[in-house]
Amino acid sequence: VLAKEKGLLTLEDVCVKLSWSQDRALRALESLEKSGIAKFRDNIVTGKQWFFPSI
Image 1 (cartoon, helix red, strand yellow):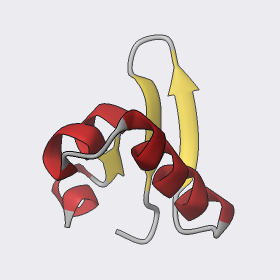
Image 2: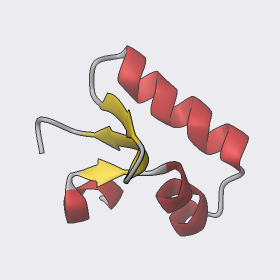
Image 3: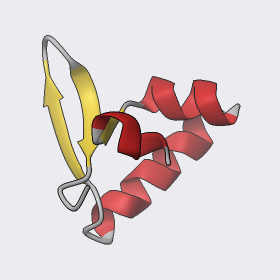
Image 4: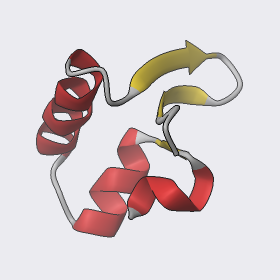
């Protein structure tokens, strides 16, 4: 549901919207990345983002 809005998530999005710690949110996002559900990108302007190609 969170990723449907923009097709991507940031660590801050997950922490704020789910009231999760940064550690918990990062573990969840990395797990989605490792399983191939999400792809990670990091750039100077937008920061760290996980996007979901299937959405």
